[in-house]
Image (cartoon, rainbow, N blue to C red; front, side, top):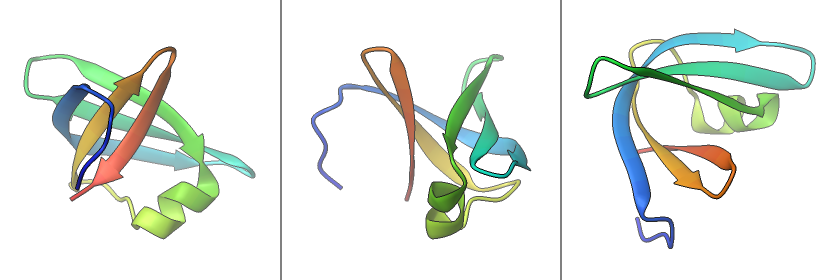
Length: 69
């Protein structure tokens, strides 16, 4: 996968809370910290994101996007 964002943190999903429109995805990164990404419900469905998945948090400006390998 090629992408212009250079701030990437690999981690593991530790929780997915799907609301009516948005979803909170908790990501445990390789250090002892957790990142919370607010992404659309559609993105969670399209990427089939669930607890235990290995993902990459892509950070660009003030947003955090989620990619799944």
